[in-house]
Length: 534
Ligand code: GLN
View 1 (cartoon, rainbow, N blue to C red):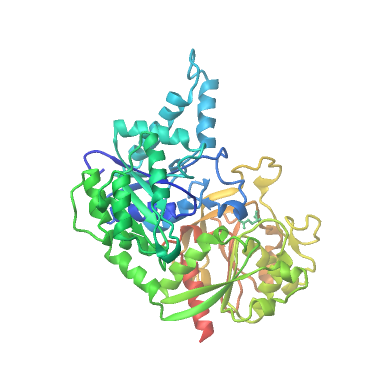
View 2 (cartoon, rainbow, N blue to C red):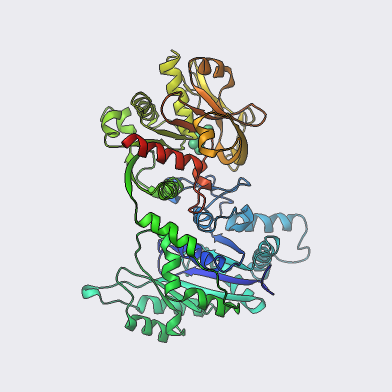
């Protein structure tokens, strides 16, 4: 640790969800990181699920996977993309994890003779957890984002724990709020005042207030918030609508957030700044080229379901100096006979078939992959995308008519994709897929090797099925390239087409893509799209 004592920041959301608390948390973390401090971002989620593994991305957004296999909230993706660090499952506290651990402790006799209470037992557990993460990760500043909104029943006990914590440690509270405007752009601060009163009634005094609004935050609005919420005017910040989320650290820095954070935390000002980050954001904002990429997906109605892929395209695009437009393609339209692959992919320079589960829209995905292969449209298959590419190849290049994944058709004559052996007989649904970081060896001379530039790689996974080893001989004989395998040679990790740029990976490389370190396969895919367009 570089500081004499560890500091804590707690970010609270007020009034409503969807204000971008994760992006704010990541941005202030970035500002402090840019000053050479080591940051541990943490998130509390009040739901009673132990993790996000069983949640539907259509309702809750993407399930993000960490190296250690934890399936967590998509905000962890934002933290990692901003901070370029690998987080651990411990950084995620859920109501489910907390109650599970306290009940397990009680059953083992950990509280013998006592009634187990929210205060102090659960709150002690929370404080100890937050402290332990800081210690284990040797961080200077632990930043805790509290999921949900102040006033929710679900996060009440967590806020109580943080109130107590502030008496023991140096804790800075930050309130994110919304300042609506009515006619003629008049900003209304009253909702913020009431929300602030609610927070203060819990014994918590936010020292910094960050305001989201559609109009620029006026001097008058700042002064009102300052007066009614007990903070200096300089502690009220404008969090405006921006072109790219990666710009928020600079926007806050321009308002002197970095200096304020350091002085509130009692840390000396340092020289380092956001120079490199700024240059990358400039690249995003001033692209020299533009491409359009089709993404086929079942959850196309909710774009949050694919946030890591969208961001990996921003990173890969910035690296190539290109803006990547996305055309969402609902492949069930092909299954239902409403459209053809050619129609859906018209105007696209490449196609991504992302991860997924179940059979809806799969015939359409296979049709899109066939179209891409035959028309030399760059293709990137992610997990399910690799599996569908293998099915497509088997059906059309090896004569295995009706080949399929047993996830879709358990009775297929050619089960080219089948259960991973260890997945047979698994009944529970929580945290039991092949999860987290797994190593892979790439074959030299392949497109995959060209993208990574090395033989040994590691990417994050989340799947139950794999390429069936019984069919590898036939697939390879007909020209499909197996470009990566697990170190023991048992699991096909990457495949590619012999011609053009078509790569499928069993992993989710999008989960490890960061602005400062874009995912190699996305960089290479975007490059192939740009070259194909010429
Ligand atoms: N449904 C497939 C499997 O379980 C793919 C999963 C995914 O794309 N993440 O293997």
